[in-house]
Length: 352
Image (tube, rainbow, N blue to C red; front, side, top):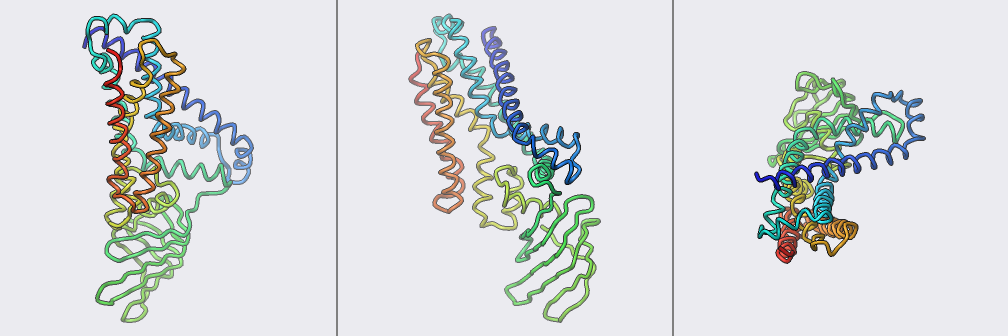
């Protein structure tokens, strides 16, 4: 790595850090201001503690990072390039004959490494952080404990589980359990119980009864693949916060429900996250770089406009994928492919 590459890398990483702190700090402060009245009410109603509030905002900053990372990398790239242009530190390299794309290579490599690392981190921590975030958020917003209700879970084969109320924890508890199973041979069955407790990878039933072609028989234990507490939580989040799940969660949903178009569309979207950050960065830099003929403010405005256009295109294609107008794979990859083409075209027209 040459001296100029190291210099650009240091400047870009510094702008990434400053932009991330600005984004996360601003949105955290705004959210805290919006909850000034909710916090005392939650303390009185459900005993919300200060440690839980701190824990919530730490987790919330992680979710904000996942959400705004492409835009953080874009704005950091624009800020880095415009500063180098304003100080005329870019001119000697371009005058020496170095291509523009080669001068930007350290920025692109850093952005791709950061986006890939954050995407891998997201895949690993989402299953643990999401229930914690939702639990405290419900205390803040609704001033009561988090109790998912009316959950439907699809299991292996043609089995369906319905929980009137679900209490996550150790052990997890279901109130009002019903399990329906059917087969092509007509051997339908039903299990219901007043409550169930998850112990040693099985549901221990209270007042459990099984009904099938042989009649009704008492049952104390129920066990079936796809009906663990994690599966019930996944069912809740796919209904209430589908965009926050990771690709492994979508893959598990598709295992039991191959026709779940929303899960398939979002699974492919989650896999394209690192490329989204890179495409927006290339497009933003190509539209903001005019070798000093444009101000840094105008460059940032152009970059934000590109973000907005991509966001609209992503929403439209994702909605079409969920509705079945296009295939889930196309719905997830089309915005990235379209803007990648536009960014390469725009970048080829930048001065060198």
